Structures are given as structure tokens and as C-alpha cells.
Length: 497
Image (cartoon, rainbow, N blue to C red; front, top):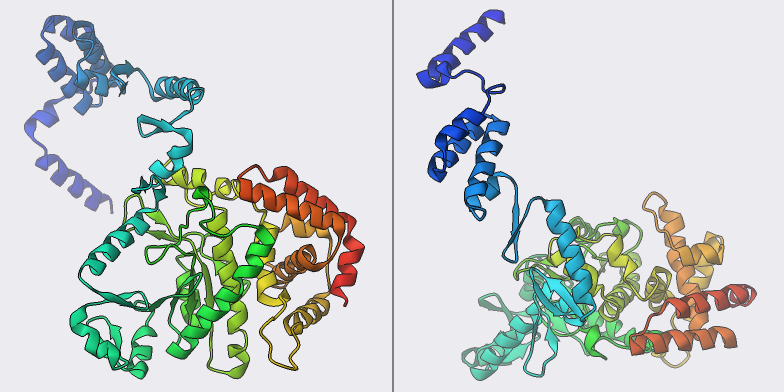
């Protein structure tokens, strides 16, 4: 090995130019005489600095650059060599000095109602939207960039006389195929069986709009219609719970995607597809807890900055009657998660992500939420399994889902400490405990809506009013939790009915 190393060293030395071999270390060389000899010649001084920098003589390079600045204080090459930062026509000698200046500037501008976006200033209320790449429409309302692209395409298609099959635009020249009951799949027109096979692929799902949601799904066409119906059934209950719906006020603009200004959900046709999607769509791994989850790491890169596109996701495996029976519950759960995100977005944190000043989905994203996590997930659990089914036929039991939920929770051990529900710490290391926590939150939410406790009802109304007005919900959430703690006995009785 010693011989090999020696041979390699000889080869490397032979490859170096003669000047390189002749150079001696400069670490201890005094740069002052050379700088003095250059006098006031900026060009010579810059060349000295360049040579010394290349030969790792840091002191020499800095001495030459400093001399250049004595002669020309605005010389950019010397400033850059010394690590100076230019901002607003001024030079700052370090990143720290510039940071301190900007922090003081931010505080001064905030008093005037302005916030920094890049190195410009906009009204504080507008800052998150500008950072996210939004723009105002003709009516002066902020518009998501994906929604803007969709609106532009819609206008163009309508101008050509096109009509929509689901959310797919159909050219008038193809209306005849449409009338025959065929489905537009890419560039082909297919019958229902072939269209089902085409859309079973994760890369080319059905895109359909229901009354309240947009559904992306790989299930067969018959179940597509059921996906729409099950999702829509959650809407009245969610509005009853929160007192507000997506799009009800300007600050509750939908984030869910380019296909429609409605919350979007995705329903995969198998657990395999569900898991594949979850692998790149979530930060916390909670898809392993249930058959539906919130895809909090989903961003759409087709616009710049990448648009936050988080949605509720579920799967409906109809390969067996047993697995198929859970489809509607998964869809309901996912719909609620999308609904709540649409009425309670984290504008400030998302704007920081867009500007690159914050990592995706940090604590700041959740800290900005006005609806606590237990109620967010409680809403999803409520419309999944604690709801009254108003659509049962004659002789049916509208309480069938709630009875199933009560029995399931009782089998798991019943309601635990309410304080733990409010703390709501899910853990993928404890799937049974975390799944139980989801159902406990659903029970508490059901009691909020249907328990009949007057103090809880008053606190609930106060929370809804805060959500509608845009005011802080901190006090209202605390009051609701306090009222629920006082009603623990009644909640236990409600669970045991």
C-alpha cells in the first residue's frame, strides 16, 4: 500500500504546473508591503486580493479589499469579498448587521400597517396572500393561483362553446360521442366499463364535482356518485357545528385545488393506493391510524410558489362486503377534514413557507389554527360515525351509526380523561390508543351538538360567533372546554345511552 500511495503522489505532482510547485506558503507573508506598492491602483489591488484568495491567504485578501474600499467605498467586488451585504442602497458589513436593520425596519413599518414581502411593503392583511402568489380578481377579492388558472381556462372553453362532462371540457365537435353515453378519457371516448378501467389508475382518476365538494377518485363510476352523495351529507352537520362554510367570508377562501372553488377530497379504490399516496402527502404519518387522513404535506408545483393543496384523503375497497361497508365512513371523515381546513387555513405560516423562511408544516402551521385539533378531528369522527342518518327508509333507525359508535367505543374501554381529549396527542406508535382518541373526540363533539347541556350550548354559540366574525377563538375554545369538563358526567351518560 505504501508503494501505491507514493506512486499516486508522484503522478499528482507531475500533473501540477511548474508555477504551482514553485509557490511557497503565504500563511505568514506580510501583505502590507505589496498593498503599499500597489498604491492607489484599484485594479492592481483587486488582482492582489484575487491571487491571495485563490492561495488561501485570507489576511492578505482582506487587507487588499479594505484598501480598495478606502479608495472606492462602493466597489462591489471588494464588498462581496469582505462578505458585506447591500440593501436599500446601503452596505452592511455582516448578515447580522443587515438582520438587525431589517428587524428595526419591520417594527417601524408595522406601526404604519405594513409588512415586508421580499424587499417591498404591502398592507399587513395582504401579506400572506402576496407571499403565496395570489392576485386580486376583477372584484378585488384574493384569488388562489390555481383557481385563477382554472377560471382562465373556463372562460376560454366557454368562449368556444364547450360544455363539461364532470369537470372535463368537451368540444362541440365531440358532442355526438357524449350523447351516446361515452366518457372522455384522455383523447379517447370509452364506454363505462372501459372508463372504469382507465380511471382506476392513480395517475388518471375521475374528477367530479358534487354540490359542495370536488372528488378525485379511482373507484368505479357507480361508486363515484355515492362518493359525491356521502361527502355532501356531511355539509349541513359541519355548518351546524362551526356556524360557517368555506367561502362564507373573504378570509375563508378555498385552498383545495384548480378544479373548483370547493373543498376537495380524494378517494382511492384500495389500501395500496391509499398508502402510496400517503407516502408523499403527509408529515406526521397519521394515515396509518385510520382509513382517512389529512394530507398536510401536499403542494402543487405547477405554480410558483408551489401552492398548498392539502386535502382529506380516504379509500374505499369494495372487493369484499366487509371492507366495502367502511367506504361511506372514510369518505365522510375525509370530507370533514377538507371542510375544516378550508374554513381555518394558516395564511401566515403558509406565506412564510412560500417565502422560504419556514419549513413546511412546522408547529407554526398548527399554532395558527383557530379550531383546536380535538374539535377538528372530532368533527371528522362525528360526521363519520356519530351522525344522525336522516335518510334511512321507513322502519330504518336514524341512530344506527351512533349506536355502532357507542358500542365500538365501549368495547375499546369507553371515554377516558377529557383533558387528554383536549390535549389530543395522536401517536403512530399507539394505533389502538390514537384510534380510540379519534372516536372519543367524536363523542365529545356529538355531545356539543346534541347533548342538551345549556352551558355547553352557550359556549358553543360563542365559538361559532368568533369563527364567523374572524375574531380570536382562544377564549371561546377555553370556555367550551371548561363547560365540557363540568359536564363530564352528562357526557358519560350520553355515551352509555
